[in-house]
Image (cartoon, rainbow, N blue to C red):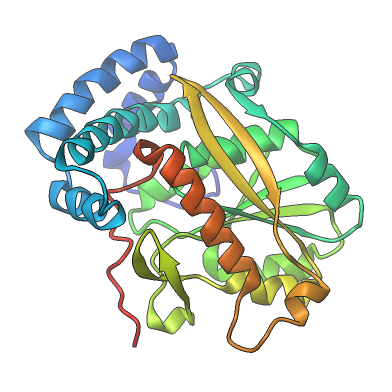
Length: 300
């Protein structure tokens, strides 16, 4: 069988595909009932990545009591369970419902940046529901939304997630194809979105800074791409205001002469991203992806 991009995956994934699509067509209210059961399974039954979550929280919030850490842990698993069904719902959600549930606070910043006829880089993170940013942005914002992602090794998961990410009109760009995409569309009114908070290894030339009380390496590709293609750079933050409803807001990042004139060894865009993300996490710690082994790499 083949996914939406014509890439084959084994026939025995067909029943799983039908099951997921069937679930995706359920109302979100019904899916949240599924999420409630998933919460208890992940948090108390399987204790999914429990040690990683505990260590991440304790190191990130050393001033919080154990009771506060456990409260954040439980709230995180509840958020994570809802996130799973919300991402699944993207496979069938109606555009009008997605637009109603994802509110863009200041889309004029994107419109102004695109009006300069340059590509725009948006820096996102694993905060809130990052998958709804791409899908709803394709409906609400001018230009073309393109999300950079790391392809999945499993061919069915890769095909299914590409369908989820592109069904409202966004484009999905494999990570290794980012430079080629920008070369092809440098004057095409494109907004290319990067998830910049992933764990960057030594081969990625990370930018190191203190983040959540820990020495942290960040991808610094935004710095290089912004300089090479004269891109405007925006931070995109998302937070859940109530179940199934998110607020998305842009923040302008330093770019242009400010970046070009920065002292050697500094990364003003990435540093500004880290500080803004840190503020967002401290405001709503349960909405960050704590199952991710964010600090697995050490500075050499």
